[in-house]
Length: 213
Image 1 (cartoon, rainbow, N blue to C red):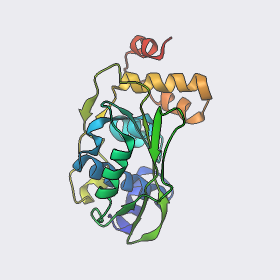
Image 2 (cartoon, rainbow, N blue to C red):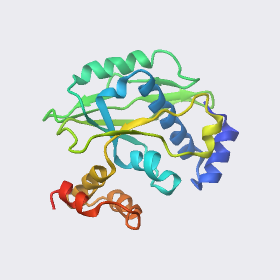
Image 3 (cartoon, rainbow, N blue to C red):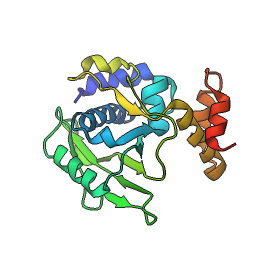
């Protein structure tokens, strides 16, 4: 894990204002790396607000602590949870992840499931911090998912690994989901994410078609 001074420096450079926000951003990178290294992400495509920040806009994006995915292959969620538990048996570059007994669930309709791993490391040893992972099984992506590089961050030079490329939903489809979400739940985070792309070159007609509008 990055040292506290390294994380503090990144927090200042990124304008995050709080070292624990910066710490979680760094831990998300470690967790993505671990899941990719163990082939757990081969069934999934990254999406959502954290995906937009880490894969498309970097520090200009909204900070989010959730990892959202959609299925690209059929799977039994319990098999994936067991694979995660095995991956979490040993510390990953000094970050210890774990899944509490009540840390995973399946929705009543069976259309999504989630897991909330906790983590600890040398300068945050409590084990009370957690990350929310949610996986949708509602539908296979319409557009082909693509493996892309993570947006460069200043702390990458201190990492003990080269951040992996991650398979993501196509950007127009991620934005279409955000647009549908704005109509369904009116969350400020969805509006903020869409506003980030208001002046960026995107295929707006395609986004509207994917959103069903």
